[in-house]
Length: 79
Image (cartoon, rainbow, N blue to C red; front, side):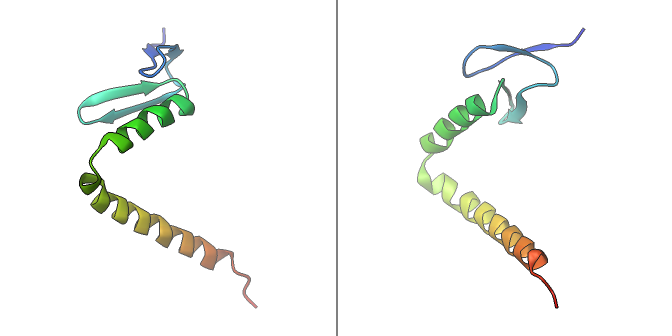
């Protein structure tokens, strides 16, 4: 029988294979929907001091900007 999980945000149970399950800082976080995951992670990000987030934020932002540029280059029509 499949394992059941409980959402850490709203307490709703959900079966294995659904929802979002992730490990972060040694804890397993289980969310039944993307809305619950967003709510939790948004609160987490805004509770962390800005100086702890600035360097990783810059790196991730630049990585995503580079990926967008690559997608734009691939989407251009070539004559």
